[in-house]
Length: 154
Image (cartoon, rainbow, N blue to C red; front, side, top):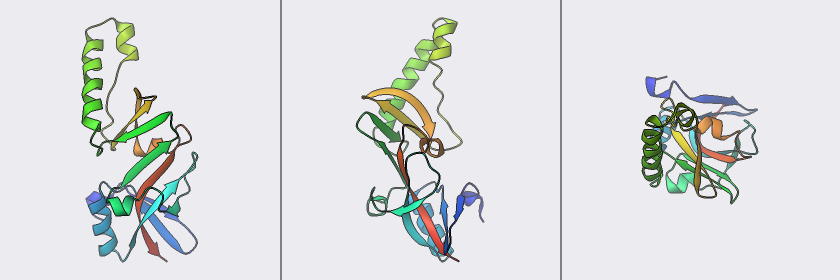
């Protein structure tokens, strides 16, 4: 496996294996073609780590590789979403303000984007709540998380 595929997660199912964790739609597509696989969308629902083949988020049609939803109250903004930079800028401004404030305020406003994996912003009722990763989003707010995967028959 090449360096770009070292972070893939593998799920062994009865007749096939699913690989998730691709850094882009294009990366997954290339991996599928190079490894005799099929590009599929998988869903992780209600906090479980058992992928189910799905088409609910239209990832393949939209050529995206991640989507999360958790009802009308919560919204997940992935680093590839157009609004991400706008919200990240606001978070950075809060971080700068916090660094010039009291130690207590700094403690509660220490917003650092995750760099090991694509960051995902979590909004509650349109307001910033937290930053998480694609992997951790599966376990938050009873979210439904959708990812591009490569299906390989055994």
